[in-house]
Length: 300
Image 1 (cartoon, rainbow, N blue to C red):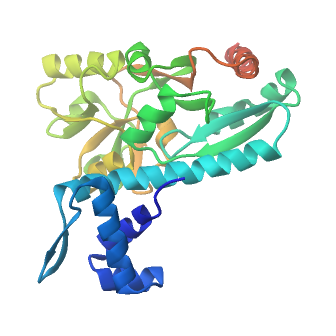
Image 2 (image 1 turned 180 degrees about the horizontal axis):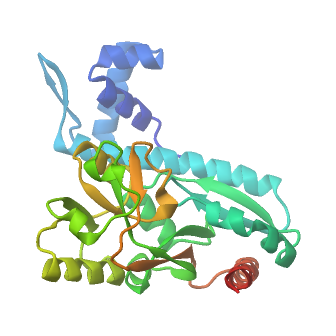
Image 3 (image 1 turned 60 degrees about the vertical axis):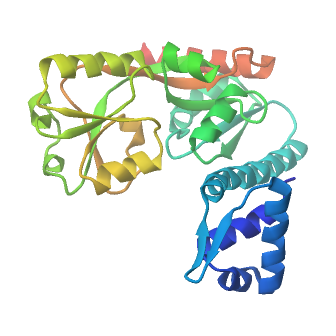
């Protein structure tokens, strides 16, 4: 489904040597070089600079490295989904899962969902949470994945071209390294964050985050706000490695083992629920109605 030379390219990029890549791939170095030459020729770009110190990726090579990982994983996932679709029959809801989008909320609702959706099967579809995947998956919900759990608001839904079913309002919390001075506390006040670097998603990503941002800028200039553009494991790694504070929600408590998520007394919340297609299939519509009913029952 994709050019197998991409896997050879990634192996060379990670190994930094044709010879080491050949050893990993169990083929000869000339065969590796031939595949790279063919790939460069077909793409019309130079991927490596050959020097006496070894191989170095060009800017084109660096760009392709990230995209190749996405292409390969997406194709493998497509094959898996096709096989699962062939094996499954009846009403199947495909739930996309990643460290940032756990399906635990549906596990908690499972007993009531069984009552309202008897016979419905659930298929977990893992995916790598990258900016490219987020754009592709959320803009095409209903094609390979039906629902994804996560935080959202109207701004984000419009940006990603999808719809959302709110299940709860999650308090906006802060994540800190277990070695951070604040990790000794069970709850934070806003003054506790004075002198800290607080990582917030860039402006216009979420109305709710922007409300918090504006409040801090106006009333608490002692907090240094650091913008970032995408929630993934790298953001959590940056928080831990740089001893920053990261805006988070409690449902992400298992994303990074060295981070502790703490509630803050600022009173800000953000919607949490299921992202789905603006025009869901009848099967997904019935499922969403069952989730809404189960959620309402839990809140009574």
